[in-house]
Length: 332
Image (cartoon, rainbow, N blue to C red; front, side, top):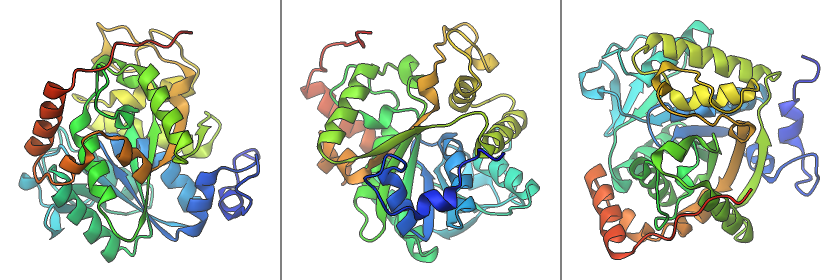
C-alpha cells in the first residue's frame, strides 16, 4: 500500500535524534549482513519475521537462526559446525514439531529459498561458538536476538522469571562474542504472564535500560503493513503444518494486531485459560544486548556454562540464596 513504510529510506536516515526515526535504525543502516536469532527457542524466530522482511526490503542481507527444541539428531540436516544444523526445505525430520523446517519450507514456497540454522540447545559457551561460526561464515556485522515475549528482560530476582534458561543462555553467549554488534528485540509484551512474569518488573527493567543508554526505541506493528501480512501467512502455515503444537505467542500477537482484546483465544491450546490480548503485544522493543546482559545478576556464572543443565543450576543456586523481590502489579 502507498502508506507502507519506506524501509530503505528509514534505514538510510542519519539523524538519530529526529522524532521521525529511532536509534535502532542507525544500527540497521550501518549493518550490511544481519543475523536474526530466536533467543528462547521454539517459535521465537517467527516473532522476528516482520523485521526480517523489512530489512530485506531495505536491501540488507538477512539470515535466520533459532535455538532449537526440535529433534535435530534424527533429521537429515547438514551440520556445518558443532551445534549448528543447516535446515532447508529439502531437510527431512520429525515434522510434528520442527519450526525451523516448516519455516524453511514456507520461505521456499514464497520463492525465497533460504536455510534456517537450528542451534543445538546448550550453555553459553557452545552457543557462543555457534554464533561465532555463523558470524564468520556469513560475514555478519550485526546479530539481533529475538524474544517472543519479554521474559528475556528479567534480571533474576523477580518473583517469576518466565522460561529463563534458553533466553539467558542466548544472552550470555552473544555477550561473549567479539566482533559483531549485538542487539535484543522483544515482541509480545504481556504474553509471559502465564509463565509467572510480573510485567511491572518488565517495565522497571526497561526504565533501567533507558538510564543505562541501552534502549534503542519501540515501534508498533499494524495490520496494514505488508510485512505483517507475510508474518501472518507464515504463522498460519506453521500452525497448519504443526497442528498439534500451534504457536501461542505469535497467535496472541497477531490477534492483538487485528484489534482483539481481552479473553480472546486464537488457538485451541489456550482454551481453559483466561487470555488478556491487548495492543501492547504488537510493540517491538529494542535494546543493546550488552546492557541487557549486565542487568542479569549472575551473568558471570552464566558465561561459564556448557549445558542447559548448567544454566538451570546457576539459576537455581542464585534463587536458593536470594529470595525473590515482592510480587508487584502495574498500578493502572
